[in-house]
Image (tube, rainbow, N blue to C red; front, side, top):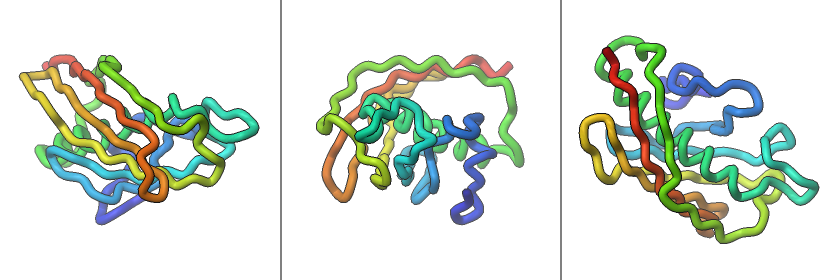
Amino acid sequence: MHMAGINIDELLPHRNRMQLIDEVMEVDAHKAVTLSTVTGAWPLLDPNGANPMVLIELAAQTAGICFGWKELQKRDTIAGGMGWLVGIKSASFYQETLPMGSRIITRFHKGFDFENYHEVMAEASIEGTLVGEIHLQIMQSDKG
């Protein structure tokens, strides 16, 4: 799970079926683009595929890639133990299910930033078709 030296396992605490991101396509201090494939190991599955509510988790994990990458640029490793509180400001889904095998591109960008509070937006698409828009509020605990 590397791309241009990016190790997803180093940036996200998620493992096994909760790590939904397969590849980091682009990342910098303000945005990230990830690729995920709906598999039988995903949460929120039914016989038709994944419930689109899982896009909220994809948005949060893509945000984690961006924030983790930014933190990694400051030091050689990411300091452990920094808690996050994530709130859903809004979420719109444009498909009833995400079919098995679908390749989802999640585009994340930061909006409002003030100290440890961030408002962020993510858009998820399958084959160029918008399937969800998610607006999150993120609070990070103090590092000290």
